[in-house]
Image (cartoon, rainbow, N blue to C red; front, side):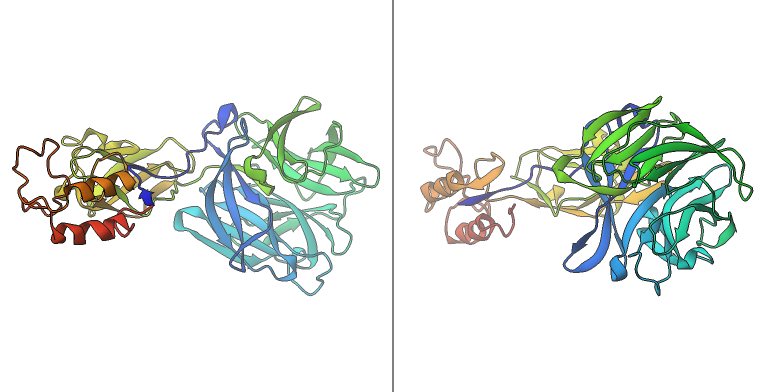
Length: 422
């Protein structure tokens, strides 16, 4: 009986991206998922060193024709681009491009321009040397992609395309830097995969074999870090990360909690958080509220109470991830939020209401049977100044010097989790 309440509150996650981060985050689209029957895809931020990940945002989209968000790429303006995969047998369904703006918590779906609109789409990557997207596509119905298009990252319109490239089986995934573009040529029929380099810009495309490492096990998207140039793949049906080092694959971490990912990209991400429902502490106790940021650091923090900045001269933690609230009282009550800033923009967290947990009589951070026992032991004390009360009248909740029915009326709803619930 009783309930634990949060003296330290906050949730999830700054996902440290390990040695590969270099100022960017490894973001991924989880395998197809729905919430309450609604279509959409969760984007997560992954620590490639450990495989741990944290929820970043949910992107809503139609799931008609088996639409799923695949083939993710980072864009230079702190946005993301993606293709909405559609069932290859859905000949009457137009292929679609999604522009995701995490800073505005928004996404926009565009129909690809011709000839991509009626094609099978697979790889998508922002190419710095083209200043737009490279998209691999092919004839609808055969799951093979052997053509490339330069596509406007703002709206999915097609700028130029190649004809079918001979000697290419399936241009699965593209990775790019300012000086070169690579793609994975995967031939399931012969169980071979080769890394190939585009040697001429589009549309007069030529390519050369770059590496022929061992075949990956049911791999999905790939991402190439713009600073380190290391290529990371989602392998083993999207549950494990591997790196291409030289001409060999190096096994990486398995994703935590059984996660599977499809799209994978390095990107600069605006800050986002998931804040707790409330914060609380017993009168006179100490509390903290933690705003863990998800996105690309470094971050700066500025705490506010009821929409007004907290003066760091009076509370030195006002500019830190964790706000410290010592000796709480009625004056502590209010709504707290945090303004979090990084290179991509500003995020204001949800407001967290702070309450006094009056039913935590022994101030141990929980409302439980010990508090109920203390209350019943002190019930009907008629004079809290009685020297026979060395522990003081903890049950005198209204501070009138008595422990009586008025205190009982205050204690019961707090004990029943209405004020100090989990």
